[in-house]
Length: 398
Image (cartoon, rainbow, N blue to C red; front, side):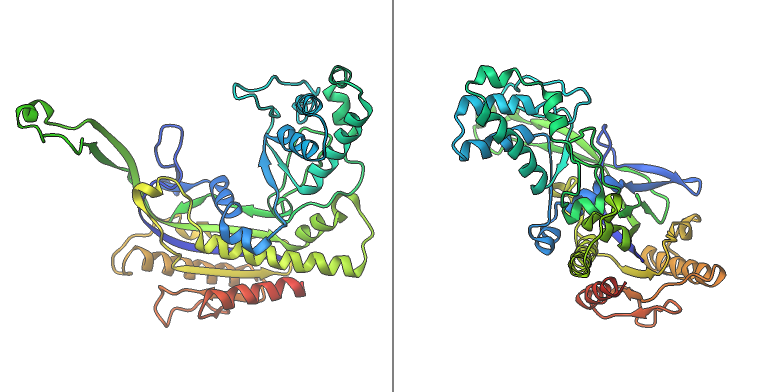
């Protein structure tokens, strides 16, 4: 089953996701320039949100380069001498590098891997166990220094199933280290696109000394700003699309994919419960959480005008982005949000009928839409808690 989430969300002036020049990200769609929020930005804002963390509690991983320091700290807490811990950390800098080539410590004296890796508690425990064994066998730091990082990485190779967390199962993982298996993401996230044409604007700002002009003799010399700058921004109504493969999520959690493990009904049931929690948590975070880019400057914290969730029995994802190939415009159809709501409804109904699209349940939360706003075959709900509960139940029954 696929759980597909469609959002319409109008933001006030903002710069939620910028490029290397500080400009809000954009693209051309339907022949005109659109505002854009990258899928990486959306995924990170969800994964790192307090809401998602509370929903999944201990079923979260950490994306980091600091594997060597994390393992060294654990060894130190177990009583391993400091000199052995530092050599062990240095050896682990080769993890994530094809040949296991080690790195020197940073200017702050910390050891890091060359690659940022998504690490679970089970991964950290496995590498800590390996280095615990190596440090216990080595009589001196010099003896431990003789070990090669590439050999250690091979020894830590994941030969069988090692439990992964719900966020890794959802968003996937790719590393170049034999110690950690790659995971194919069960969730797909589209780049958010504005439903309309967008032109960027500039906010010109200055900074002035609070004590400027207090001395009458220096008032003329002090006149003017201490700093002058500008920041680009736009205002856009975004269409956002998320797709979650429930079967793939459960298979990732249980190791059926790729290890083809035989699992008990109890294990499958526990994985299904965790999957339901993960999907419901991702749904709520997608609705409530906004990217943090330049929020101290713009505070663009607006909730969606529409949330449409469709549970499809087959893995045939359908995005409704083409509803906005012709840009939405305020006018006879009302304001920009109203025009976007109308375009989405018409597009959904045409595709559902024309392509005989199956989905059940189909659920709608549209607090900003008129009370008579309906999409054929879709049940309109009153609040987010009810939507989250219904989606969780659908996942459990899949």
